[in-house]
Structures are given as C-alpha cells and as structure tokens.
Amino acid sequence: MSVLRVLLCILFPPLAVLDQGCGSLLIVFLLTCCGWVPGVIAALVILNNKKF
Image 1: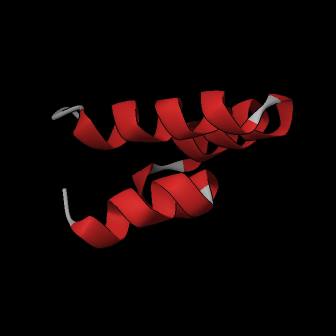
Image 2: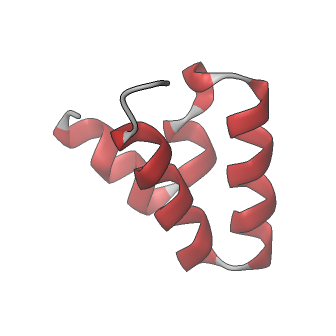
C-alpha cells in the first residue's frame, strides 16, 4: 500500500477504494456517512486485504 493510498484513506476514504469495486465503494461510503472513523478503518482494511 502506497503513502498516497493511506493519505486518501485518511482524507476521503471512498476515493481510496474507488478501484476496488462497487461493493467496497458503497460500504466505505455508507460507513463514512455514519462517521469518519468507521469509513477510514473500513478503507484501510479493504486496501490491506490481499483478496481485493
């Protein structure tokens, strides 16, 4: 994971997972709407997961 992706996860989580698919984008967007911290955590988990 690059430094740019980590910064995107912190600043705007849905933008960081844009290329991971529609489902990931939707989940991170909804979690970010509920609260910034859950969105950041979800984006970091999705980007660190080797399956995606």
